Length: 160
Image (tube, rainbow, N blue to C red; front, side, top):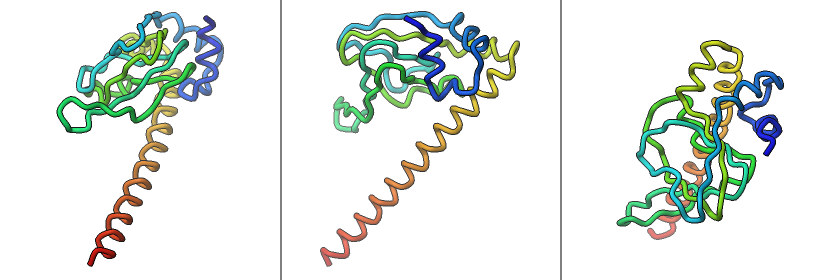
């Protein structure tokens, strides 16, 4: 698998040159996941980001009803997940489960931090891209939250 090509086509690594992408590829390692296996659990410690190169991964969140998990997002080949672990050491916000036999490259947070100490440009670009992604997700969440409040208000007004 051509990890450099996958990195080049991913928004998190946009703006890095081939040499910088090669530096990132050098510190990644490949891992296989069988269908249905849990890659990481919600609230587990975040130790790295995953770059999916084969298969599909379901992002699932606890719905607060016993142990029921709901799929809130599907990761497809070429996409990343667990990227917030490159920013902080906070617990994972969701559970990830392989939906079919899958292969991912893992970029460990500690190795990435060490790389950024020797090449600050890589760290700046990746963190800026992650910030843009998180910002877009937050805006989308705010819109959905506002819409739900409006629907709740309209619903309660119509019941009066």
